[in-house]
Length: 323
Image (cartoon, rainbow, N blue to C red; front, side, top):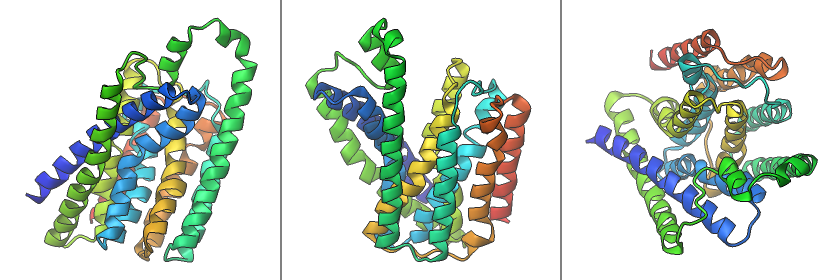
């Protein structure tokens, strides 16, 4: 039954997260909020809602190892698995996308996060520090996006605004009736805590039944499950030859996971940092981030051999965790 709870919880989280994003995007634009603001805030928060609810629920259930393992494991999986598997399938043409600025910010957040963990447990002031970094980065991204839009103003003026929004915001339907928007929001808001509750409860019991630490369950089962949306999205983008911003999306997700999810979770309750995280997991997360530096600074594409290297590295990491 525990495995059924985990599978059901993951399924509900994925469906509820998708519903919340669709409802929030369409409601925000219906209220006249600019698409740029929606893409930088509503979509970012909505797509990370499953991870956020899982981490908060884990702290409330006195299973902080799952909360921290979920985020650290998701960041590692985002780079090695979410970029690796689609690259094996078809390759990711990310070379034309300039992600250097966002990548450096991700490295800064990662290093600061590791430093805060060394001062652990993570408490409310650590959470405020992480959220302050997130606010700075959102503001920085907003300013850069505005400058880019102004520079491309002439070209953008020739594009149909609805088509442009559909390209920028997945889930946008200009003709969606209000009752459907509210239904999506209700499904998301009800489904997310329900799915998180099932996933955390099932994961804790599995860890206890098999004598595995909650930290390892968070780093593996929960982290891979909550990274499934990013993997599916990147894989479909690769198959449709629209993976030019896949690297940027992964970088953005990793920043939000560390600064946003753990920032909010630390305000809910203290998060003890298991010494095991300093033995391998935090350094694997940082090492995986450094591993893609040549792809960022030299504008390399993620070829099939590169994808194989990333995927094998992740499988090796999993084997060490489960030994």
